[in-house]
Amino acid sequence: MKSFEYHMTTDILFGMGQEAALPDRLKSYGKKILLTYGGGSIKRNGLYDKLRVLLSDFEIFELGGIEPKPRVETVNRGAALYKREGIDMILAVGGGSTVDCSKAIAAATYWEGDAWDMVVHMDRITRALPIAVVLTLAATGSETDAAAVISNPNTHEKLLFFSPCVLPGVAVLNPENTYTVSPFQTASGSADIMSHVIENYFDREQAFVPDAINEGLLRAVIRYAPIALEKPSDYEARAQLMWAASMALNGLGSTGKNFAWSCHYIEHELSAMYDITHGAGLAVLTPKWMRFILSEYTVDKFCDYAVNVWGCERSEDKFTLANRGIDATEAFFKRIGLPSTLSAFGIDDVHFSMMAEKACRIGRLQDAYVPLSEDDVVKILYMSL
Image 1 (tube, rainbow, N blue to C red):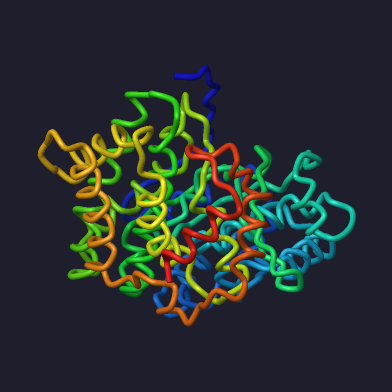
Image 2: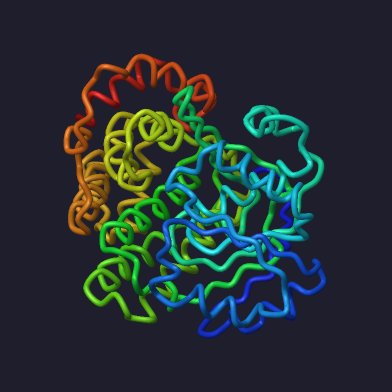
């Protein structure tokens, strides 16, 4: 287990009605709020009106219509609004896309020039506006981490940027705000949670404590995602998924480990090129990646995964046991209604070589749990067709 520094300062307000605490928590930031949100679901479900009443003592400016894969043009619009109005803070109301876009806006307000240069040169970020979050989707974990993913449709790029400056200061996690999430988005969010945990779990470092946490998080999603799909207003199921999403990517599950991921960087290239939902793409790729990397080197880890996550019985044939865990993963994604092939999205092999090159270069896949070459990534993509 490697040495590490763990520092997480987000003030998390979890449970029913926690939005009521926002006025008191936000007053130290100032009076002018930039309210950011996506396609308008918060207006349909009443959350928008609730927040406007709660925050009536603040001056509120709005930036709605944030895309499911937030674009750099939207980041630039938000930064321009700050410079024009003198915004004091950002309140992101939505899922990971809204939160990610808001993080980029928060940093871009102090950046001279186009926000894409900031994403590319994230090491130069030194300041950001304060950010608060009211979460409406259990998926990305962006409410309690310091990273964001921004897309540039002009270059078909989708890049991760990281800065401690954009860690949200306050996060309201009320599971009731996820009751109206569609079945497909609930399933895709659950796959995203699982993928975050799996990327942390499969690592060269032996780290028993974080891996025990990771195994528990995976079991939680496996147990509660089907319940949330069957009963969308089941508070306990929505609560467990919401907390699992935050725990999956707040850094706790990667403590003492290498944080060298594979599937996410491959999927980023898919969703940068095609209009697919991130979690659904991960549900296709993850089992294929597992099968590709299964070897004498990795089989013991896959056996632990099969036993401790899926409840498979130990057997003398390690590879049979390992494949049972992979089969269970693939079957679960199908069970919750997610596609299992890229062809289901209408994706063919035309761009595989280009996507593989970018995934390896941007994701430094030569340093992954199992190092991957461009040819390896192309093979995984073909397995996914």
